[in-house]
Image (cartoon, rainbow, N blue to C red; front, side, top):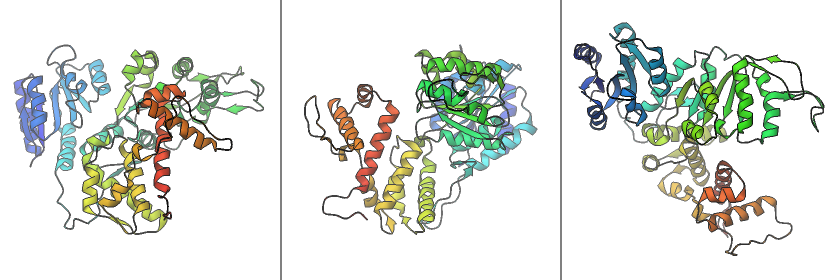
Length: 463
């Protein structure tokens, strides 16, 4: 089956020329007259690339197809009668791969289309169902799906410029790996890559960590400390969970972005820095701006090129390959030869994976620990420990009691599980009640799941 190319062009003659060109490359071409027909075509056809006239429709025009998710996992190329840099920038920010001014340039467009045809052509099935799946590697990323190859193309392009990147994606999708790949592909690859989690450090410590401080600038400052801005000089500074940064610190970060200078806490010297900024968030940055969690002016500075990392549910073709990759890594690490059955791979591929690649990796690790030589479906079921398998503390109403001498970690677990029980599993309410972030709560629960796997039932020995 040929890959399909969707064309929505207000100029019939140009659309005809583009149709003939794409057909000669190897595409089956579908034409659409308006946005509604374009949406229908993406549902009923094997569309892998779409040429959309930017000026069709009202308001945001052809960009509506990016805004409503119609072109998710589809290579989106926008075109216009006039060369408008503002339009091109807006299209790129919303997820378009390319923008060109009509008429199209066959020499520039041909190689791109040829690559997409080759990627979209299905490879022959392996002769043996037990044969390990292979998966492409791009920098620190792994994946052969259409969604990942689209990310690779955009990443290769934006890595060559020195503009700020904002990586948006759900937890567990590999945003830091995207940042590391962007750094490796950039002209700054020989410089340092410095990462900072904005949610992991309280405001006063975060400022010292980023800006540095002079000796005696505050209680405990026994010596001069170079901050991360300075340590990242000549390289890349990755600001993870940027929407969790304190709003006051965001104002100071904005000034660094604007002036490329800073002063250490307690210092008078103005220090120039040469740093590329890459940020990441697992929430909608636009919504964070509306909620007052992220300064709008800082957002525009950091999101010169936004990158969206696809969740694992949009990468179904990668799940089997990733499972084999994680298992092979464990075998190499521990010098074992554990394999996995095709039935187990099929079972894995059918799961929703809300925790994305991180959850899949942890799942394979659990199955590896529990299996003896071959991972099969029963091993997966045994590894599928859920919150229901973690025994909550006895219902003591509004109070729990902890004996003197109880390890702090155990007391914390009692309190967390009691709070979850009281709020019927509502994690947001429990996190608010406990005074911790939702991310911290999820991390604790994941630790408890792993403890449950490592702790055998009474009367059994741990393998």
